[in-house]
Image (cartoon, rainbow, N blue to C red; front, side, top):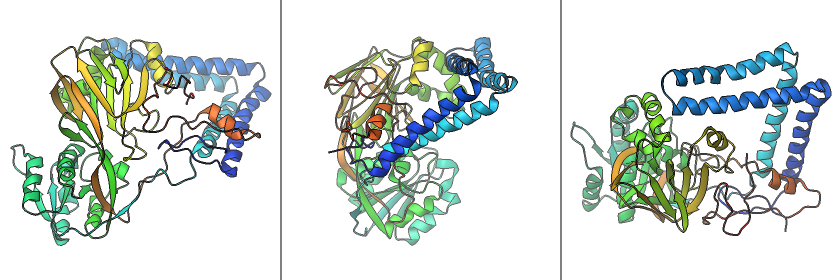
Length: 474
């Protein structure tokens, strides 16, 4: 049976005729992008390639120096980073080759777009199944009026929720509120649905209570970023639209991450990112604090030395470690993108080690670099050279005693979402030229399906447990 490379959910899909022709078209476009340069530039094409590669190397190296150094060297590196592409444009223009470079770049861009279309699955497997929802008799919503720059008041969420029969608890006052305990009291009083209008950290705390009592949970996108809502396909521009879940909703059964005894809906981060979040000035000046803190972290002068065991895979001395409830899209090493699905029953693990400019450059090449390891696991245990380590839990700073254990709770939470919502777009396929070649083959060779979502063997720059080297991706 002919096959298609797996979608990001890990399911093997049958290749369609149109996908095979798209694969062939992508190779044709790539060939034309090269041929047009050789045809019109002749020997100058080698010089064009050399200039472009040199500029790319300089840009990547200076980008690393901007992050890892301070003072004059940082600003000088930033200036070179900006000037490198400008220099390439000037050189091409003086040689009368700027138009040719632009045509070739468009060709490569189109080849990439067509390749992704060919590698994207043709089935509905990337969508989480919807379950029928029984109307809640006593919904209880917790709202944070300070979250997201005041979205609760801006979108009149309290009044609209109460008009739909919900009881609303508004977080007020300067003292911290134990939202988990507020939710537990509501359940004891008879609430059969919990919801939160606020950030992901608050969402996670209340989601844990809903999962504990087996009742539905509603996400209202009143936070600043709301990454959990993004992966649920909710409307992040209009939080009031999420209230439709109370009157016309369907349920999604999703996994929850667990760090110690605390729930997370997105990710838990260790190392460099957690150290940055822990800095007091981070909330007021995120960019400035990050740039000020990273040099010491990248040089190993700050923070504890970490090690981790993901299932049976050992990860030694990562500078940054990201553990997510289900893996993020390929190439996302910061947890800022999308997760294809939230019901695969595995943790996504990304470990980053950057000790040199070469490794920093390698990070931008994808999975195959010694500075990056990407895998999935059901549990991961993080230890360190200190008794406690900083951790970012859904973007909130925390400090936990070691060892820190993270696990996945498959299908633990029933999330109620509006039946009519923006939804989740198909995940972007990773461009693997070896799989694309097999897909484009006239002999219809079988295409490797890769490791399934529950397999923890995908490790960048290393062999998987089957002994086969994973396909390289761009």
